[in-house]
Image (cartoon, rainbow, N blue to C red; front, side, top):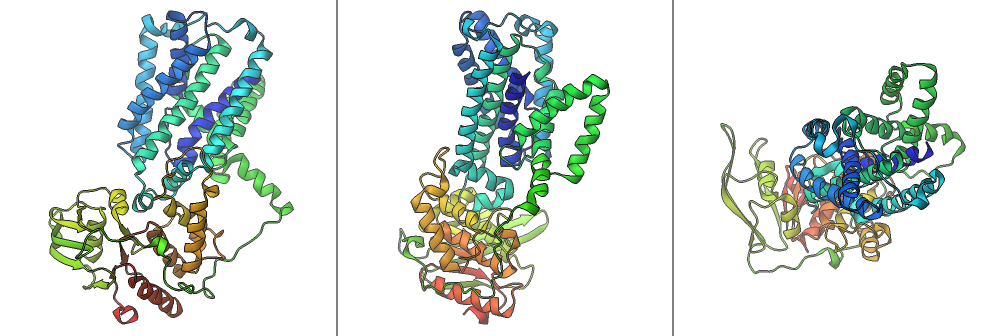
Length: 518
């Protein structure tokens, strides 16, 4: 029915918060659909037999609480292990729902779910479901454009870099997991009132696979793609099943075709078909005519004042071994304020490892690190970044699928009070917009701000990498071989930038071409 299409659209839009926005593939999201349905049916049956609204709201609270607990456990693992844990979670819940007959009704399910008398008419109930779906759509649109939503996309693009500009990614992923599960649970609540029946079928692994297929077929990187995928799947199933009982085999072949030839789904096919009829503004990513730091010294808004006198950064007897390999042995040094320092040594001497120890990528075996009078060894990378340590990487570490402007704004946003806001439009926050524009001008990236970060020249990517570190308003800046691999003109441009920076922000760098910098 049309109501089922809208219900499934809500479910997959919720799932897409994980899959499309955050890059976390869940093989067991149908469990939340089933939990929402069961919770609403049980609350109505045992506590509120004449009500719809309160059992539905209670079910959402149960789903949200359960997803926070489950997410805190499942999100301890990443990649395929995360996906396998969601699969195991669903299989376990299905066994419980199918066998615990006293609670769930087992294979018979729970019937006699009631609706308000005014909603007994299918068209009236469809209207309510459509209004709820529209409200969910508006809420998700605001969330996607809000600081919280932009961070989820950053995690999908490069979770490590998101941490090194100051985001506690585990916290954001847990919120994404809970919001995603709750929206899918809402779809389950609407479904149980539509069919007036709750069963274990939505908790089955096959149902979770169907939801994931809808997301992929519609287009998981687009906002409305999953909803389009839900419509396509249901229509395909209903019409094809009329002619053959083997419709699932045909659908499987079609799904493989989408994966191989159109991974961006139906939305991607539509964009390619319409491309000849649309004029798109192009923006070059060449950096040859641009000069970083042309506007003078770095603006004061990106300079953090020190909290103590003496060295800004000091390392004392740092040691780190990887098995039998002693990568760093008893390294000690101090970095003074507003000075340019270099960490020198042959290839393989452990310079980059020392940077990784200072910034929290690896834990120390022995020793300690002091930053502006505060001990920071043992802290997470995002906490060290927020304490005042900004760094670039030996191999450029960006959000390659996002624009240059989005990269800089994400880094600026990490120190803004609204960084966890889920409603306010990130592009409309004046402080973020002003700081982003200023840093783009100063780094020489103004004019290419709409280009994808991954399309910049290597020199442009180096500048952007440093721009991300500067946007965090660091107390000290660590640059790992910033001139490596650059052409002569780019080496001169970046070298001048580093000299200019060190007059206001202390810089510690690893570099072989010392004469170019000092």
